[in-house]
Structure formats: C-alpha cells, structure tokens
Amino acid sequence: MWWSDKNKIYKANGIEYKKIAWKWRRKYKYKLAKDYTITLPKDLFDDIWVLKGRKFFYCRYFSVYYDIISNVYILTIKKDYEWDGCSGPTIDTKTNMRASLCHDCLYQLCRMSIIIQKCVTAINEWFYRILKQDGMCRFRRWYYLKSVNTWIAKRNAKPNKTGS
Image 1 (tube, one colour):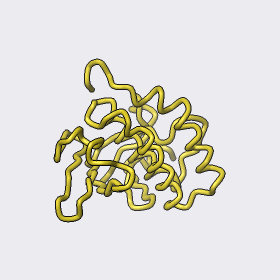
Image 2: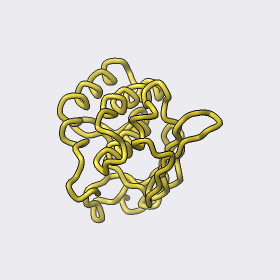
Image 3: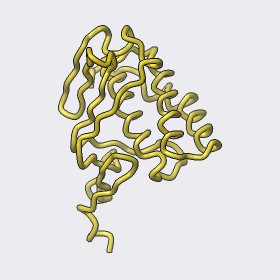
Image 4: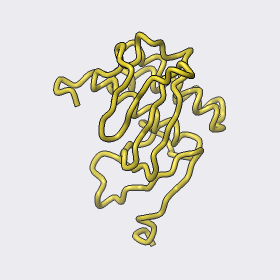
C-alpha cells in the first residue's frame, strides 16, 4: 500500500532520500535522508564566481567551504533538504536524482545571491556531467541540458528580492 513505505529510504548513486507523501507535499517531492558531500569542479567554478570571494558559507540545509589543501570548493547538502527532482516533462530515475539535487541546491544559492549569476552556465554544465557519470543516455542528457539552458535557467536562477 502507498502509506506503508512513507519512511522507506531510496538510494540512487550515492544519495539517500525519502519521497514526501502527497498529503504533506507542498512544493517538493523528495527529502534527503543523509548528508551528501560533493566537490565542485575547479574547471567550471572559478574562485571569483563562487561565494563572491568568501571562503565559507553555511545555512540550515547546506554549506560550501573552500578546502585550502586540495584547492577546491566542497558542497555539503544537509539531511532533510527538500527538492523537487528534475523540472519539466521528465521522469525521476536513478540517473537524474543526484544531478537534480545538486542543481537545485546551487540554483538556490544563486537565488540567495551567494553565488554570482555568471555561474548559471557552469551549474548547467556540471548538471550535464553528473547525468553522464550516473549513466543517463546521450539523448536524454542533451534534452535535459537544452531544457535547463532555455527556460528553466531564466526562471529559477534570478535572485529573490527577499533574499531567500
């Protein structure tokens, strides 16, 4: 029955998450069940762009910090972070869950004006790389990237006037 798996933890490519029941769902479909840490690729995210020159950012659901030893930024998404999966006419599968989680988190940082707007292209390119790493076929990767670059990026990455 649909109510029996409300606490079931799903796993997809290194992340563990729960589905939010329709009854309690407001805006998001998934909730992270365990902290997830990933390194932002140095070739895409320049020091000047990420965090506007800051070396550390922390809030309730995620943190970004600069690791001096390895010379990279590390993104940690905290347990209970909620996201909506991939936007548009898509089906959420194991090949796109990790990419949608990281993409939504970084777009939220853009909306909070923590990451500079110029990073949107880099975020979308990284989204494509994660889809490839997780085994999505070439056509679907192209389709997702095309969707994100056209209408989703223009709509979602604009900073909020309230800052949240």
